[in-house]
Image (cartoon, rainbow, N blue to C red; front, top):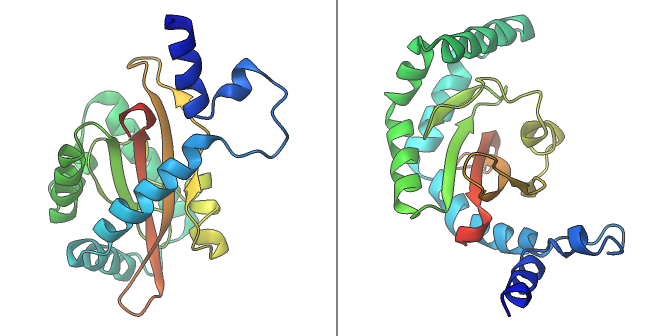
Amino acid sequence: MACWGKFRTAAALGLIGCVFPHVPAGAEPAYVSVVHDYVETLIRPMVGAPVVVKAIEEQNAKFRDVSEMDMLVLDETYRAEVAQGDLQMVKALMAKPISHYLKSKQDDSQGTILEFFVTDCHGLNVGQSIVTTDYWQGDEDKFLKTFAVGSRDIYISQAERNESTQRLETQASFVVTDERGEPIGTATVTIAIDAL
């Protein structure tokens, strides 16, 4: 019976392809639709809040003429600070009202949201619920498959088991728009699939 319970859980999460590799090519894992619905109904409305839109617009104005070299330097500085435990950039980001807002939404999710951050139009973090590994997301699929191509779809990454927590996780990312519907940045949320 215990074995059958594990089989049902795997099937429900769309992981049956790991057990039976003959799943048709291009078949969408079942977790994708569950994550999509969660993001569409709960997360997308959260990032439409004025505190989020205003923070992104302010950073877009601040970094209007930022070069790719500047973004790389910012990212390298951030990563070095995280690695060394000298969190000057992180502290400045975490002190912003938008970060407090995102952290409160993560806390309210009862373990479903593991990480929540938004970026500006360049892919630079504007606010974050926890310490991220990097500051510039502009070279990653979460930005390249959403904002960079003008897509309004939700990009959902392949599910992975977190080695330290043993939770099955995925990231969902989408474009954030202003009041006129113009794209201004992105939002990314890391979701514990087994908490949905």
